[in-house]
Amino acid sequence: METRHFLSLTDFSPEELTHVVSRAAELKRWHHEGRDWRPLAGKTLAMVFELNSTRTRVAFEVGMHQLGGHAICLTPKETQISRSEPIEDTARVLAEMVDIVMLRTLRHEDVTAFAEASAVPVINGMSARFHPCQLLADVQTFEEVRGPIAGRKVAFVGDGYNMCHSYINASRQFGFELRIATPETHRPDSALLAGVNSAEWTDCPRAAVENADLVVTDVWSSMGHEAESGERRRAFEGFQVTPALLDLANDDAVFMHCLPAHRGEEVSADLLDDPRSVVFTEAGNRLHSQKALLEFLVG
Image (cartoon, rainbow, N blue to C red; front, side, top):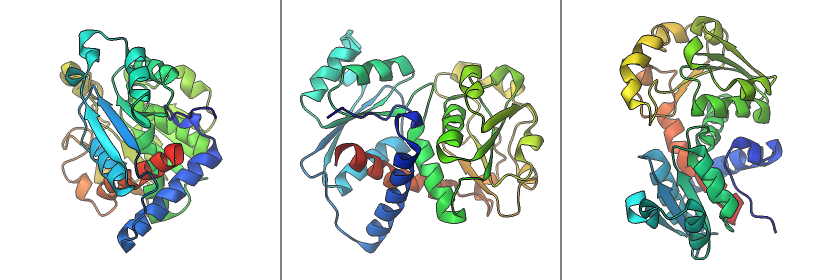
């Protein structure tokens, strides 16, 4: 049987993604009911982190525990990668010992090379190009509070980086309309955007947010861009999401942020606590969407 990987949303069909999201909702309900469900007993997940993580690490580690499995966390300093072992060799070694690998690294090429060499499923826990695990939780959260996301209008305001790229893919895979607002200097990948009819770009946040059902943002200086924070604050002037900007969306619109947030930069200091914000439910749903993903790939 062919080994399946989850490096971007396009690795799964729309039907498979819909299944994972609906399964996440079911696993969340089972968890709250106290149901014991351990389909991954005896299975091990290796988590390889080149970059920092809170939600991704905790969700995968707790998720494996709840599913009956075990998780191992590795940083580059704890592996032979730090001593120049080719990433492909590390992938082959881990595949002899574990059942699935989650990799978070800056270079998307490293995730791809790791997966190509691995005989077990590999999950992209975030790279510079995509953050697909976050989108599973975001769609789960929207459908939990507002119903199906298909046919809805989504606005992404901020940096045309990995979260934006994953929203572009999600618009096609889940069937919603996406309007992206970024500065001209920080547009998303033009080739990726050109290949998706459901997404369009503007340099005007107000135009993107108007009549939206979901408004999303992300930090202006992602991991790897910390040295550019001053320049980026100037470039993104006028792109802060505030309650007033959110007022342009539909009355029942919700706001999301993958976190961590820089209050006072990409979001106003009060927005995460606005009644329309579901960011902490969104964060909590990482646990259940990642459990559904693990179950799909391993179980």
